[in-house]
Amino acid sequence: MKKYKVTLTKEEREELDALSSKGKQKAQNVLSALILLACDEGQHQHVRSINETIARVLNVSMKTIDRVKKQFVEEGLEAVMTRKPTSRVFAKKVDGDLEARLIALSCSPAPEGHARWTLRLLADKAIELNYVDEISYETVRRTFKKNLLKPWKQEGWVIPPKQSSDFVAQMETVLDVYKQPYDPLYPVLCMDESPKQLIGESRTPIPAGPGRAARYDYEYVRNGTCNIFIATEPLMGKRLVKVTETRKKQDWSRFLADIASKYKHAEKITLVMDNLNTHAPGSLYETYAPEIAKALLDRFDFVYTPKHGSWLNMAEIELRVLSGQCLNRRIEQIAEVRREVAAWERERNNKKATINWQFTTADSRIKLKHLYPSI
Image (cartoon, rainbow, N blue to C red; front, side, top):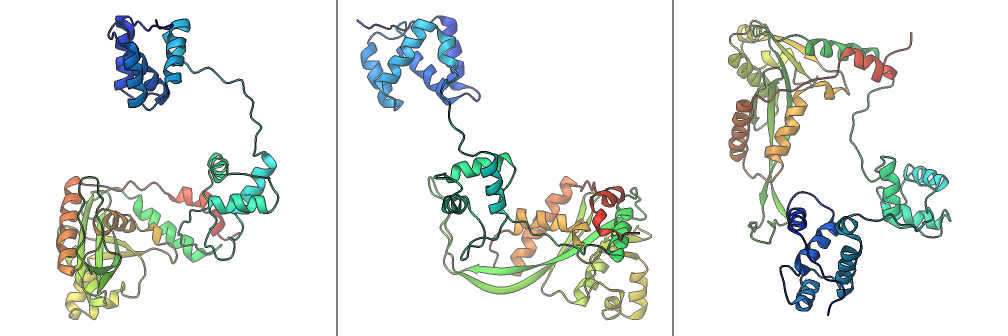
């Protein structure tokens, strides 16, 4: 005769059914619910055989099952589902002093033979320097998580000079352009370009299957490069993309002609771009006859981002989206790049994905105050 018999009411059974099958619940509560449902003598007669089955299926011990049954019989369902606070007191392994030492260590140069600090390196170094007798890398991780630090992570950033009147003057010019209201006769576009390597497979990849990820050989075949021009109208969610074999002055000039053709209705097109040597009015005269070059040049008002300030060009945002959604893979032929990019361009334009630029001149004078010359 069993000492602890579980008999659930209809309401308790419904509550446990819902807890074990719906929503996000604590794993321990779900396990306890499954145990109580299986041990309910109102539903089952051969309790001992069921206990053994539960222990095998749920991978728990008979002792755990008996503990849950005992707590339910003596204290009720609420006690089973409520975790009692522990009375054990654990000594803190990382105090304020050790935390400061770990942070300072993570900001120092990495050991010789390593590109950057890792959690395990930091834990081993803390022990080596006698900061602590023993510490795990997981304890180090929790310390850095609390302080929002990730020493293993690096960000690439183009760092402008500390003070530069030329930089802030060009930056504020670009920001003034971005705050202009939409005018179909005077649209504002951003243009940029980026190379793309053409890479082929040396061996046929194995496609993904049930229980198996796709496999690609680490060897590849280099098939040269191509260049991707992109122009985007942030306020209207339009973009124009062109893939060329080279990035010469003539390629840029022909892309400008494509933009002018697409915006035939516009009286003047404001074009924001970086100051590459090919992005100059003279490139038009090296491509077209003087009268054609002058007519095309009169359609545009060029606005250049400052040196080390390419992040001010919204076309870079579109290039990153294009790379992440479409080009972040091996593509062998330029024809395939053109086909894939054209499909991406159509879908992106159909969605009318705009760019909500938030950074203003007022923000720059506060957040980038160190770039402004002292007067």
